[in-house]
Length: 223
Image (cartoon, rainbow, N blue to C red):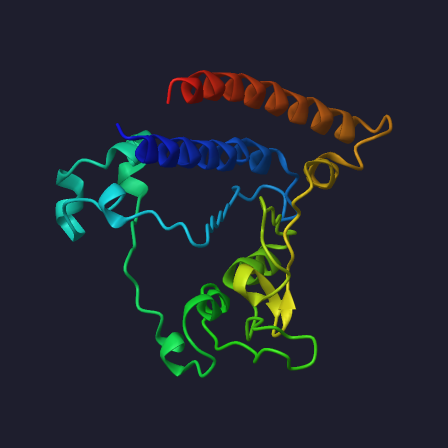
């Protein structure tokens, strides 16, 4: 393995490990939906300027043939959920064809909104998305607060924001671990039995993730 490939593999594993480590936290968050509802989750992962080539994830078969093929190595952990998977790729971003403000990063604002962006320098807008993003729309319909996190999310402009409450209303990700922790675990003080039970559940999640991170460290050291 060349140094370049080893470096890319290490960076990918680090990024993937960080994103997967956050999934148990999502399960621990109190739902604001009606009691008795089954949990419904939507996770959107975005990495700008560093796309993962389709050769690493695209199955060998399409449609009914998908069930007869093997998942790529990087997706093997999803094998038990194969009958629930729908893998979509190479989608055409039709709104991008109507964009008048150039190519490249301007298209980021289209990803989850399906709308053209605001022009650079129009008031406080800097290529902000032109409408609500699908993640925020779904969260509002389910009655939950979307948790938007980021690691080095880049400049404060539309080139690095995919989540929107509405036209020119970007949701800036939390990139401070302490603030993210407070967002997820704050407000659990006091002797209320319900809060005590929630604290216990969140502590068990922390213990679980701590073990996972230790295992990930061991894997990264040999990557």
